[in-house]
Amino acid sequence: MASVKPFRGLRPAPELADKVVSLPYDVMDSAEARAITSQNELSFLRVTKSEVDLAPDVNPYSEEVYQKANENLQDFIKKGILIQDEKPCFYIYKQQMGSHTQVGLVATASVVEYNNNIIKKHELTRPDKEQDRVNNIMATQAQTGAVFITYKANDHMNAVIAQGMTKQPVYDFVTEDGNRHTLYIVDDAVKIKAIEQAFARIESLYIADGHHRSAAAARVYETRKANNPEHTGEEDYARFLAVIIPHTMTKIMDYNRVVKDLNGLTEDTFLEKIQEQFIIEPCTRISCKAEYPHYFGMYLNKAWYKLVAKPGSYDEADPVGKLDVSILQRNLLEPILGIGNLRTDKRIDFVGGIRGMGELERLVDSEEYVVAFSMFPTSTKDLMAIADAGEIMPPKSTWFEPKLRDAIAVHLINGGN
Image 1 (cartoon, helix red, strand yellow):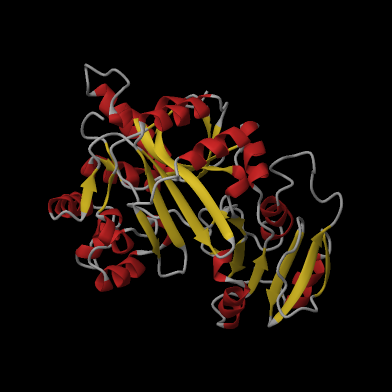
Image 2 (cartoon, helix red, strand yellow):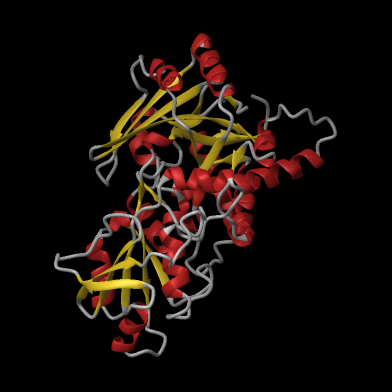
């Protein structure tokens, strides 16, 4: 069963919250982060992407960067930009993006349960990205970004969480992207106990987004445990920061592909080869957004095409093989365009659906890329089924929105609760 615990959150002073909270470190590059912090010196990117405060030619994975992260975090604490709650609390984090609303519990999850697969994974991690977060955690002695976790929704849990939103929120603001962020503090002992007991009934939790953060927390745990002869398992480093949202509230958007060339093929030959595994026809709409599973839009030479995977070109009984990202990879990207490894091939890039279909057209029309593919979003149920089966999803299968904001609450691991 899953265990969640409250913690003494380090979080922005209420009047500064809208300036301090930041998008996650991994949805932008250093140049984009510099542009943001140049306009807002209170941005928490100065901790999560602290190279912004160093020379542009500094290696973002150098020891200097991680020490700067700690220096900036301590400065934020010293100046009262970040304050720590006096006693352990749960926090309820509500986000609104247009008509979509999601409500999650901000809590700490167990590293041991992560290691024992009570908290299930569906994605492989890259060693360099994992090490980057390990270094950041070790330097700051803080988990600065939350792991996005989901679970199978139930009415009892919904009611328990709703009870945590009866008081006035401590934060309620709108960020530059138009999304609304509201945070409630749950410090009542009865409500805290009710939340803990409700989660104890849940058999499994699922990592939706944040595999590198959770893997890094697990590695830090092993290091700290090995160096602590009095380890009990109750230390702060034995848990990691999470925002836990029911599966019915998660929103996965399309995660589209753009490719730089046709692998030496002419356009006519390329279109001919596609017909072996797909039904292809011109798209009569202005843009060809995928409307259902196994349907793909393709933008080539200023024209949209509709591609539908032919029956028999995939295994509907295979939880990974039936994913659209797998079908496109196995039946088109690899055999026709020669793209075998999505993690390392420089000829392909990925575009989150939040950027819209127009971004795919722009990239191809700019001639930086030759062809674009729009995808139907992977479902949260598919994600759970794959995790339950112990399988791994292909890279770049999911794009979650709205993004959880860093610094809504930070989990310090340099002492007890």
